[in-house]
Image (cartoon, rainbow, N blue to C red):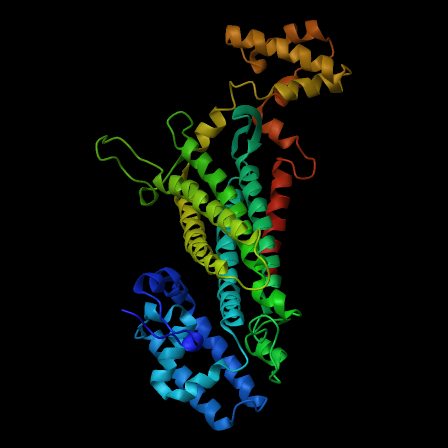
Length: 461
């Protein structure tokens, strides 16, 4: 079965059902139906105000578009693959509503600037939602950090015990990662907030349109200054996918640690039953499936970024059908990252923190070795020499089971007579944390300052 297209005037044959389906995008770009109607309303109002259309024709079109908006909100619009995309579907539905005058809506525009406008509007609306979802997760992290400033845990490098830290300090590291994500998405808004409408196919139009007026009506900062760039630019979408990929890196890293820390080996956290699942065969299992899912979903977001980069990398100006591949990845990424942020926030908020296990993990792990090396350095021993001395003591302790805080004072004084009873205070994990007062460090005071700064950032908007 073949269908005569709205653009088919110069064609003597029509496409097959197979090519209609292959070339159509309505299956996914119908997600931009609201934006397409919104852009069409701004366009027709501008056509009326510039006297390109009569007030009568424009009002008829406006009323028809408003009726389609109502039908869309009620879930009553039916789209047809034979009409290819959301733009031709809307025009066809408008024609059914008001008759041939609907054809005047397309005066002084092309599907090239129309789709670009819809896509900008779609992402422009979703970016604040993404930013808010990140901020919600940041708020959870700050609240947890504030409640756990003095919770002591091992800090890791190479996934080996390194130095004692505040759990609040650890949580604030993820806050700062997410803050950079917020700032990247906020910058993304700048390039999304440009209007392609009025660029037409690529060269502008002979009609006396007012692009500033349509940009203003749609809430854009300004129109694109070059019509070729307006229809061919997808930097804003690439920025979004790049930012989303970085966000998913951060979420995946946090989820990896949640997975590790809920094991019997670590036993630092226990997820609430709401955010865990069981096994179909092993009754004892409590699996961190949702953390694993978030970790796994990073791959699909990375893939969407690579896909659009590949589409764009050798694309000649101005518009090419390849650009039909620009939307599905963005749509799916929006659908992916917001639930990931929401689920992770709930997971952290409801998890049980096993503070005693965290603290216990720092008692016999030699993570206070740096404290002893620093103590010796303060007493005048060059740090490199102090490092070697402490390394030997650790090696001996690993063989004998004697920790640094269990070594007798006499043995320490045999190494250096200046060593006093105060060495044992310095070797306590809590003291080790408290002494790291450098800016951004893990001391309780520094962590509180980080939390105060974070709350200022969260309240700034």
